[in-house]
Image (cartoon, rainbow, N blue to C red; front, top):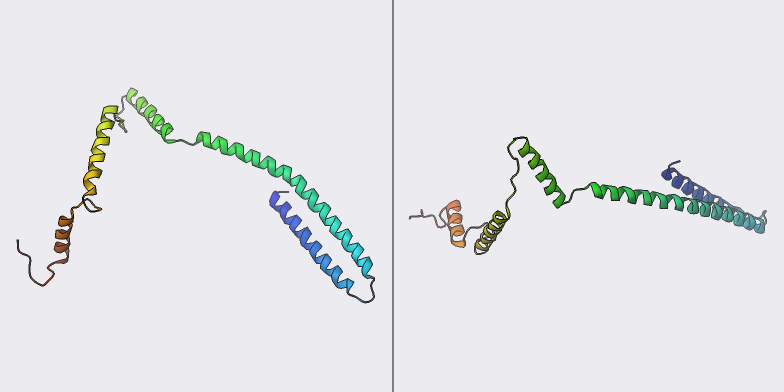
Length: 161
């Protein structure tokens, strides 16, 4: 049986035991029955339920632990297969080297260390220039002029320049 079916079976068993105990409670109130006999039967039912639940939990705990260990093993294997950023660059570099040896043109070009430094300097100077401007890199006065051009004259007169 699959685990889901086992959990469903133990649920149905406990549900059935609850129904039986409710039935015993109704019988206990009957005037013709001895309530001590009903109490004895109820204790037997509850003891049987406790035994089944204990056996179920103890045996399934080992299965759950084994499944957890198996799942952890699969997760570790998957993490080994998953590429990190460095591994991706290494793989691309290997492929490009193979393409170069076969005489094919490169698809990707790696920057040399001096080119990387130049690129970083160029990128940082762009971000510093953008700080003094609006969020889209346009100065405030230019943005105002653009707004006027898009919306047309504000007071009904044509703009003259």
